[in-house]
Length: 360
Image 1 (cartoon, rainbow, N blue to C red):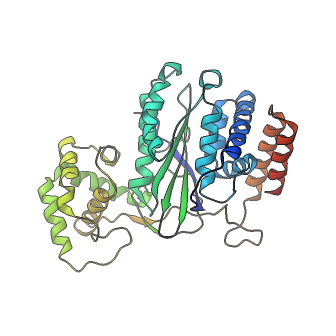
Image 2: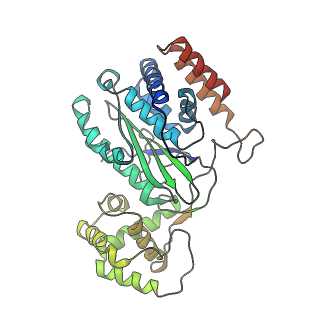
Image 3: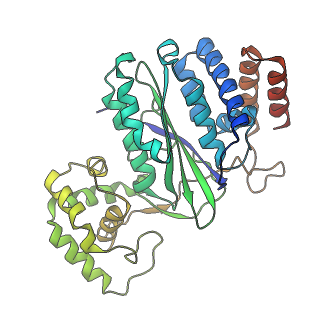
């Protein structure tokens, strides 16, 4: 079992389509390459992971590279620029990047394993960390954002960071999730150190501390009750006049279509919620159905608390909608300014980067 990771932040950003023009991305790739080299050389690969896991620093990094500061594209483009900029330098830097947007995200395990011969550790725990961080943000935390981007950064010694993003087509926003592996807590209980978002709503939050009893009950139901019994309970609940609870309704759940997932859980006899979450085929609807049974049959409700608490992308000088964290902002700017100053890039590119950083 690998060291569990701690989520370090989440950002809500307007959902923009399209991609960076080739002339811009090429410059972002070159500048990202030099900044990563400087940071790794000066402070080590683990420090680079810490910086990428910091939502404030990541946003500043995107501004320095020249990308639109507040759109969803800053996540995918910055991660892509770092990946392409450091391609082939993994052995030299001890810093590796896997995954990306859309179909590329599904290649993450293979890309991690392909770097295995350059690592000092077994890559299997890294593959597990990648998979579980995605499972948590897509299934255990159902906040209305469907993951479409997953980038996994890691070092020779097995340290790791995840930057992933989901989209909500209804409100046309994207939400970014940051994880830092060295912050060891628990994959399925309060993995967030800080979550940044434009606003909060309600979510099925199975990783909240308030959901501890619900997690145990859900794992018990999945392991001890036969699939046909679970389906029977869900069918009965569908015929009742139930109270509306955000993200915990049967309106889009068809019990008969979940039999295979229930059967998988019953066959594997998961010992706890993390084991259940890690099973292939156990996704959002399966967990939502089990959460409803836990709530209405066993009287152990899961938390509906959206863990998003703070907005940095839309914070303002007047404190509306949220105050700006000046200390963190200043630290991010100063660190990036030092990195840009030491980077082996042309005077014009360096000057433009400083101007963007100063303007931001």
